[in-house]
Length: 331
Image (cartoon, rainbow, N blue to C red):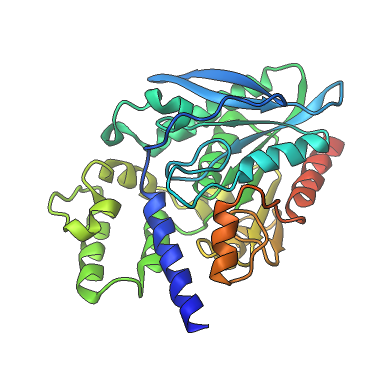
């Protein structure tokens, strides 16, 4: 048990590091036979996406699926070894089987959208929000679709809720989204995982960033988290308090949270629910951050993050499908 706990803490630290790598992914694979390649012009370049359509005819709902942070592509995969789950690709396929179309895309700087981000230091969180809003506008203008729903995973949940409000989506789904501000979550994730001196340095840097100031003297051991080139992005995301923004969302919302998620705890979902009481909260026993079945055992956690052959947790797709269909009946 002690060995597993240590390993899980290490996995949590690895995930924190991934969340602060903003764009170092190789080109994504082309869309498969069930997907149609799409592009979207945005400020500074062009984004690449995959539209997956069900076999059904007539108007249908469509979901915009937004990936989490780090070098995570439209399929939910990272170029970092051990982080290839195909989670979002599997989600798109599951929705298509139930008559729901979806569009997932590589964010700027990632995969086939790499060229849309000239440099890491120029990236701001609002760029991601604006990009998602442009995709939403494209889907809303497409006569094939009825309701347009945003599904955001992890950091993609904050991007999605802001874009949904700005561009007028019909519904929003938060998958493992946080309620606390980024700095608060990062402090919790780092607590107990660093030596006291290193933790004090981390706090010094975090405090400066929260106040909008960059820090030049970053110790080598913290460079992966707080290198100067990523600090402007961190400042731009720290200004948002997700729960406060969620409270102002005036569309139906679903909160989905796995109970064995080592990155985002159930407490975050509970806080989101408290901020917007009319949102539907679904907690899924045995689902981790990769949206797959896993206990707290480190071997199962690693497999869920790194084995694309493993299916999604069986309770995930039905929860989302039920929510989307409820919107269709209401409109």
